[in-house]
Amino acid sequence: MINKNLIDLEALSVDQINKLIRKAKRIMKSPSDYRHACDGKILATLFYEPSTRTQMSFQTAMLKLGGRTIGFDNPMNSSVAKGESLKDTISIVSGYADIIAMRHPVEGTAMAASLYSEVPLINCGDGGHLHPTQTLTDIITLSCEKGRLDHLKIGVCGDLLNGRTVHSLIKTLAKYEGNSFVLISTKELSIPLYIIDILEKNGCPYEISHSLSDAIVDLDMLYMTRIQRERFKSEEDYEAQKYVFVLDREKLDKAREDMIILHPLPRVNEITVDIDDDPRALYFKQAQYGMFGRMALILLLLQDEDFVIESRDFEISPHRCSNPKCVTQSEAYLPNLSYRKLGMQMCDFCDKRID
Ligand code: CP
Image 1 (spheres, protein in one colour):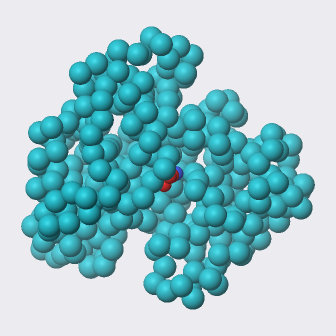
Image 2 (cartoon, helix red, strand yellow; image 1 turned 60 degrees about the vertical axis):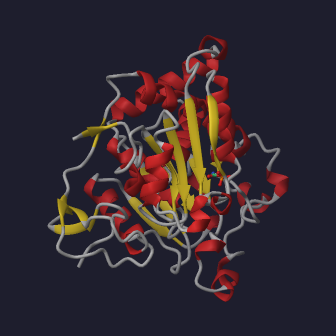
């Protein structure tokens, strides 16, 4: 089955990802050529969870393409506050807008919303699950700053359990030849097993590390992440994790001169501010690249008939997904969609195993 929804960057082929990067670079080179590319088009940004970069860069992207924007950044100012379901909100908004960019705190919500949207829908983050347009931002930065997406040694550090940006990034870079990964976290915040399965399936070497000082010495890229306070069960659990990995001058002095530092942002305390002026610190520039990536994505989804995204084959499971963070727990009308992987039945919304 084909569609025009971007829920998971994994659904794109390497050719399609490279096409997006080429388009973003063309826009960067000559933005005025695209000033009227989306004249008359409307983007709806539905943000059920806070955002600075993703929401504003999508809005800016559409404005720079000549289009306009509608939406909300606080669902309590919409009829969601009166109990409107996701299905009804999306059915209505997709009658107003030409394309929807959506963020939600619950895993699998973008996939669920796409079932009821008449227009392309873009996942801007669904709980701790995925954040594909952040990955688009990250790989455009890598392509522009390192000149390649392959044969890289990539360190990812911080909240690897809840950090949706890391999950999307590893899944995407695992598609490219010769990449290896160092997964730097505490035991409590280690990467989900399904991501390890993907690394193994793709034959990507990986190491697990509990020391940023040791891991940093031979990386091409260090991807720092925030400890996701909002995903913890208690403040006490968060307090135990929040200062474990901090990139400071002393640690950075051990890194190679050509290593680059990326961070999806927002930063809390995991990179000290004295690092910001180091030429290797690219996280603010990275956010700029993201806007061009989002312009490219809007254009390809709205205007390129050849840019279609394959859906995986699904079936109806007799069992409901039991992941308490999955959208199927809160939106009762959703069907029990599932797919098969390595002989297991997986939830089509949150990618967790259905037992
Ligand atoms: N990187 C990112 O998603 O930032 P925002 O939460 O500000 O959108």
